[in-house]
Image (tube, rainbow, N blue to C red):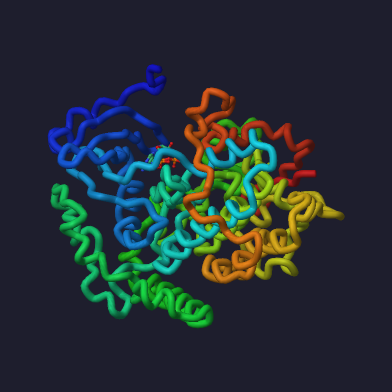
Length: 475
Ligand SMILES: Nc1ncnc2c1ncn2[C@@H]1O[C@H](COP(=O)(O)OP(=O)(O)OP(=O)(O)O)[C@@H](O)[C@H]1O
């Protein structure tokens, strides 16, 4: 069947790429990239060529993947090409399908995903997330479609285009030989070095951990080191703001992205000033990351000072979806997303989340009082108390209360019957969600979830102007 996707030709004309790879077909495209299946001429290995059209996204993905290459649950980056004035091309291992396809396929099967399979998928995700977090890398776009799956059932975290390293590499003890990506990779020198040429510098496990140590350290030690590193990060941020990688994105208002605002029928009713959390603040993070259904409440409320915990929220949403085969919070806009979360978890107050009132958009947007939140139990009918409790430890308002990936890896849930199935017994779909003819939504199920333009969805809304701009009250 002819590939319905329009063709981008630039990669086909790059001599340094076609000298080494035969491009077979385009397999997908995202907000910033086109991805091709290709064959490495030297040994016939099938790989993926990811042509990234955005400088920052490519930079982030390469930098994060270089730090994570020792983890079996992170996509392998074989090499990359980067020349001035041209898109970066990442050479990645090719993984045919993803967890979205696993969930989609399970919907057609009586009984859904067997519990032993759910546990094995979760353990693999947790290993990948734990590796990221040990390296202080926040992925920021965890969702089933970004969890790629090999034919033999190995799951790998992919799409690090939104990832952010929450500290500068090189300032941790035992990491002396790790210099910055720019220095090592010849990033500014118009070269396209192979990973081999930089791997020496990046191979020493980061944060001073190595695999052996990873296995041995206790949870307390893990937290102690994380806390220490966070403190160092803050100290570094203060003393050397210039060294931070700036997000360069536009912060989104809690009620929607910038494009949402453009479409907003109420636009004339309020003023929007983007200076808070704008893109020129050194080291500030943007709240406008991640796919809405998996986006943590601190992001929806415009936080620009969040941490690794945003991934833990997404993880909870993914775990819930593996259990129920339905998205936990399928918001059709950012406001609806928050509304759905609040109707389940209850009102957002200082009691449940100390200092939540300091979130940038906390006072800008408010919801009618929820007398009786439905609770996560109602979203997880027929699930065991253990499963509900695990989801609750991730999907909770206060980021400080969210369980770490390492804590969950050690949870007894994964060590009791039914035991996690071996990887070889996982059911791996033959087709990818979105390439499956039966799928009405296809890729768009996760990638295009509508905009905020239709406020009618939420019933009456009161717009008030305030000293700082405006406030929206939804009832
Ligand atoms: N290594 C790979 N092997 C096979 N398919 C891949 C690989 N990497 C990405 N893809 C597919 O290519 C498409 C786009 O990839 P990806 O999500 O990484 O790009 P993106 O532009 O960062 O996307 P997004 O819009 O989700 O942020 C997806 O369908 C993905 O499954």
